[in-house]
Length: 189
Image 1 (cartoon, helix red, strand yellow):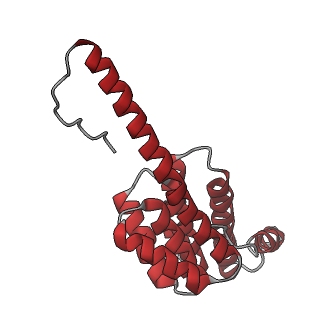
Image 2: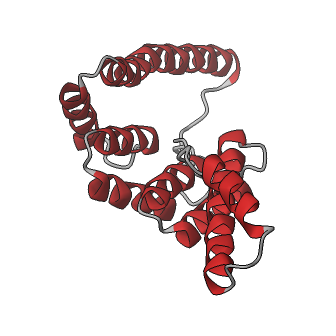
Image 3: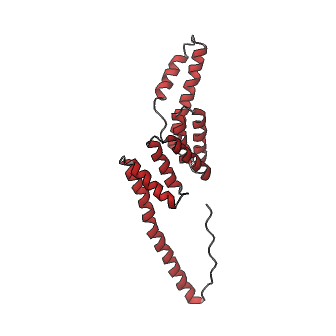
């Protein structure tokens, strides 16, 4: 997001200018300090409610926040996570897709979208979402792990198909078994 352009204003002359700038700086600082705890407290409260299993209350709090700040990416992301936990996965997916469109530079929505897609066995789409997450942040360890899980599941599919086509291939069965054991762990948000 580009910074807002400053409002045009007249510069007071000489010593008044320095005093005016000091006053303006302290007012802006005070406003930022006063606003920060309220904003942080809202995220903290939604997180606390969610962690304590109070998902409906967390969702209500997130939605109340979003009614006044509908484009807030962090709260939208938190709301998507709550929806997924409430088994409202279609709504969660729509919110995550919207986040990837509105904020394509954020890796986390792609990762969590991939988790929902992988749960539906849409592994090619999950892989593509994880690759986007990693394009945005190559140091995102969770996305790397999830991509490994998805690739293991895709490999298991290929081995299963090869075994189905040619059951006499002895070396495929152990590979398939190993990958099936790896694939039992679903990707993580």
